[in-house]
Image (cartoon, rainbow, N blue to C red; front, side, top):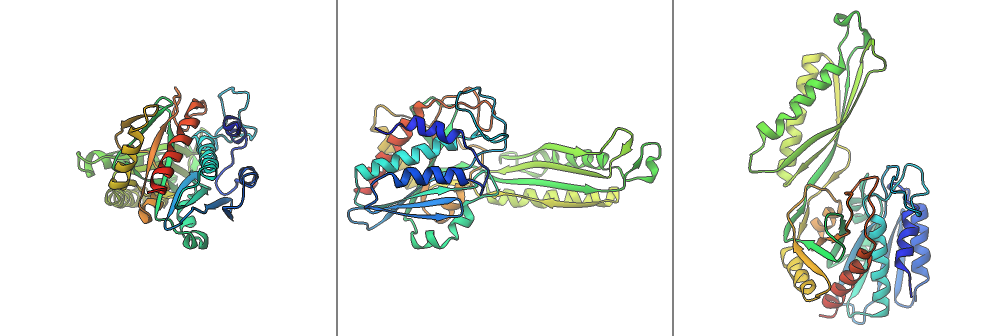
Length: 373
């Protein structure tokens, strides 16, 4: 009997950042190689892994994707198995995600289906983004799925609960970095400088008008500046300032509109404060849009299991680069209830491990239903 809670705890202790998941990849490969190999093909891509499971007939290829990276956070859970990597933590549940994938893979080997299956262990979901380059890889072009699905833990739902909906599930997201460069100098001679603290605060005020004055009130958009850095000491006027934030929209069109407005505001700051400005949109994630027919079929399947509680959820302003897979391949994503009082990306996130069994059961049930249709 495989102890999947132990696997989750092992993975929880070794979080790594995007495209640096070397220890994680080795752990996953060691487990995969411990399984019967007669129906498996395994290929690595950077720090990611593709595992193809041959079915009895193999007319279609059904893919399941999990993410494998952690976040640059210092864990504060106090758990006996907390992160061994200083300043790194699985604060978004990817340790749970990987464990569910390994469990579903094991079940699929024990209980073969007619169709072929593909397990995708994707690096760099948190950044800089692994989905788009993975979709360009020769491996996935050889093993192109007909269907793809995935899950994400939801701390706000109790373990044993599954939630999703047809259509839009997660927002379009973009990072936002703006650097301002003016002219520093002594605080006693402000007229000889171009103060980037003032420029930055004026820009922040302007950015906050985008949602209230440039977006349809019936639309949903978020523009947040979460970090501002400027200056070196209290009596020197700052020559540089850096704004770091995020943009989230419910449509690709709104994302384009917001970025155009940001660029106009930044251009105005350049002129008004006689400074130089650069914009970097960092990692951009496409919306997670569930195929209505497929997710409805999934919901019908799950509702037949009395030990799994299903709820219909609303769309969320969270981002997930699984959206790039769904842009190219029909499929869906669902929430897996994880019952934690702390939310995603919290340094105190501690999911209820009972969600692992629910996740494995849900993924395996879907594979069995559509893989033997």
